Every structure is written in structure tokens, then in C-alpha cells.
Image (cartoon, rainbow, N blue to C red; front, side):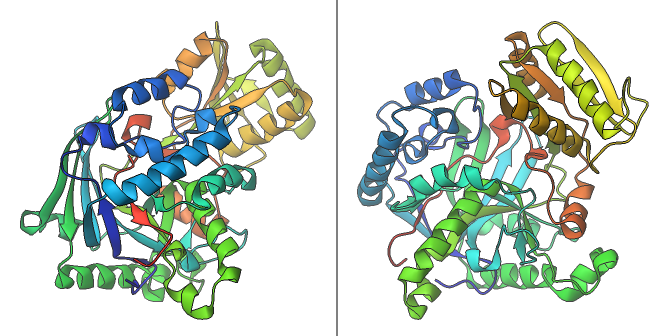
Length: 432
């Protein structure tokens, strides 16, 4: 099925109804990247039951010697699930309601993104844009999974700048008339989730009309007068930037092997994703913190002061200056700020220092952690953390429109357990 716009209906696959939801759904592969225990518990909880856990490569295992074997196992599981597990299908969208830890309900629509309408290349202005700088070194491991894969299952979450609530909310208002596909609890504190099939032609037409309106030049110029006349932005990547970039890279790799006719219909041209409204009260934009390992907190502080002096950044103790943050180690935490930062956002200034530091300390390793309690726990284990200030979600679309992209790993949509869980699947090998 060919969508009418950059985001459209898909042939979406779901597991048999006898498979428990709490075993089937699994958190995104780029979560808990320093917490092997989480993934070991997930493996134990799933056991021999079919699960999306068997369709992904958690990033915590990327450096292991058996990573290649894991990819082979993933492809074998995809082939098996295609035959025996994914026996239900939706031709349209899946409307999703996810109950967050706060009790608020996050609404979304699962459909497919046209990768021809998306690019992560610097300076490009397509209808669908990344929210952060793409680190090309992160693409090959994900490409290894996607290359030769029979299926995809997404944790990509897209954001629409829809203050009028024209796209998703009207579908939610009709959910009583939709077929319920699944409902239940997700594993390891993932909370409650429910999904409904959206297949009615009238609703599909309504979704397409709303999307066309959001992506119009008129709507874009009204929202962003500073960029009037520029190419409109329809959707921005809220989460899963590198997963979507990997799907794009694979599609560009595949295209030269296809005929012009095949390029119009091949399922790898699209990528399954969930779209949410950034203006929803349930959408929380939280900062992503930086944690250094194999380093001494005192040495990091001294290096930070030296770097600040050499760049005239004017670091000082306290939060009185422009960009404040907390430097925390195993035994101490200090609030610091820059008087003359080298980047528009605090995270950009800190990233500049971390790049400088790691070039001079090859033993150091950096991780990006969403939850402050998890950061504090890592500090108690010897980590040295840069705790970022709050991130205003109102700045997200303006930052993308005006600045291109934000620094990588600038923000997170909710806590780690609130990330999109893998649920729906789609065939990317043959005809849909």
C-alpha cells in the first residue's frame, strides 16, 4: 500500500492473541546501555515465549564477541515469527494509548514513514527531519541487523507540531468504534498499553488531510515567521534518530539494485514509526545526562577548568552564569556554570569539553543516561556525571527549523521505561 504523504497507512503485523503482552513487548535497544542486569532479567522473563526481544540487538551487547552470532539468531527468529507468530494484520494505522508513570496517557499513531521524505544529511530540509546530529559510527551495528532482515519492529517516535490537535486526538475520540488489538502491562515496569486498528477509509482520509495541513507552506510560515518561505517541516524525530537513520542508509544501499518500478513499491522504502503530538501534556521532554567512566572526578574538574580557560568559557562555581549544570562524582557534587559558553545549549558546551577530554584520555568511556536516579547510582559505582538542566520542549521544533539539528542525545521523551516498546512489526523483504 503506497501512502499518500510522508507518513501513511501500512500492512502492520501483530502476534497471535495467545502470546502474553508482557513477554512480547520489549523496551528500545538503546536503553539501559550500561545495565546488563536489566537485559538479563528481560531474557529470563521472556524465556522461550515469542518476544520482540528476539528481534533486536540491545546495545549493551554491541562490544561482545558473539555480536555477529546474535544478529544471525535475530534473522532466524524473524523468519520463524513471519511463519508462525505474526498471524494478525492491520491495513491502516494502529492507534496507541500508553499510560505513563505519572498516570497521563500518551496518544500515538503507528504507520510508515516514507524514507524518500527524510534525510539526516547536514543542511538538508526534507519534510521529515532528525532532531539531533546523526553519528554515522552508530549506524553500522543497526545496519547489520536490518540488512537481510525479514521484519522490522520500531521504537522510532515522531513528533508533530500540532497545537490544534488535528492529527491524533480525533482518532482517539473515535476509539470506541475501533477494533481493539491488544491491551495489558509491559515487562519490567513498562506500564500499561493498548492499541486499536484504524482501517476505516474515512478515518484514513482524515489523517492524510490533517498531515497535509500540518506540512503546508501556509502552516509552516505561520508557526515559524523567522523562517518564512523555507521548505516546510512536517514531522521531527522525537526518539530513535539512529534507528531511522539506519533504515534510510539501508534503503539508499538497496536502491541501486532495484528497477525504477521496484523503488516505488519495495517495502524497505518505508519504516514503521509512531507519531505523537509534541503539544500533548503527556509528552515530556527531559534532558539526557552524560556519564564518564574509568576517570577520576578531581581530574575531570581540573581538566574542565583548564579547557574553560583555554576557550575563555568563564566557568565558575554556582549557577549564577548563563549555562549551569552539576558535576557529580562518587563522593561529591558541584553546581557549575559558564559565563561565556561555546555553544547555544549547555549540552553543546559540555559535549565540546567531553570531546576534548576523551581525545586526551583514551581509557575514558562516555554513556548517555536519561534518568537522574540512574545517573546517581552510576556515580556511586565510580562514574563521573554531567547533570544537564531542564530542556524546554517549546524550543525543539524552533531549534530544528532555525538551527538544523540539536546536539546528539540532547533530550529524551520520558523515562527509560516510558520509551516506545517494540510491539508492531512489518515485512521489509517482499511485497506487502
